[in-house]
Image (cartoon, rainbow, N blue to C red; front, side, top):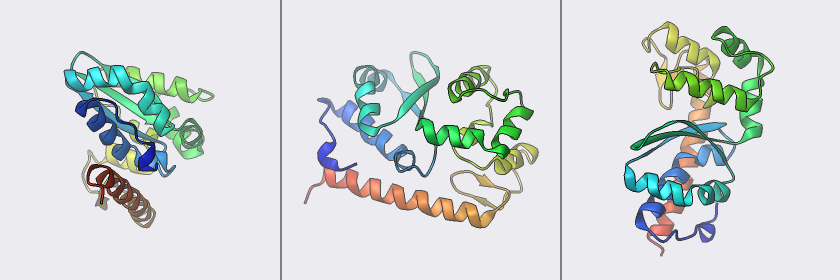
Length: 190
C-alpha cells in the first residue's frame, strides 16, 4: 500500500497499532499467505481497535474474524476470503481438517467458527496453521512429532518439502522487507 494512503488516526497508539497490523499482514495483503493471526493486547490498543478497526481492515482490504477476546486481549485472524477458501478447499487441507472434525462442504466462515470454538476450549488448535497457509503435511508433522525433529524452522516448523518452504519463506521475507521500508519511510521521510 502506498504510504500516501496511510491516514493519521489522531493518536500515537492507533497509528502504531495500524503499523504493526500492516507489517504483520503484509504477506496476506500481497496474497502470499491466506491469513495472519494478530493479537491486540492492552486497554489502549483495544480502545484504538474499537475506534479504528473497521478503517484498518478497509484500508488493508482484509476481512477479520475474532477467535477469542476479553478485556485484555483479542486474538484476531485477518484474511482474504478468496485465498482462504482456496487453501481450505484443497484436497490435502480438507482431508486433514476432516480428520479432526471439520465437516466437508463447510464455508470458510463455518470453518472459522469451528476454529474459534476449538481456540476458546483451552487447548491450542494446531490446525490453525492450515488457515494461516502452512502446508497440512507440516501441521501434521508438528503434531505427530510434538514439535520436534523438523527440517527447518522459520515462520513454522517444516517437516516435508523443504525446498517449497524455503521458497515461500523467501517470498514472505521479501514482502516484510518492503513493508518495513514503507513504514520506515512514513516515520523518517527523506
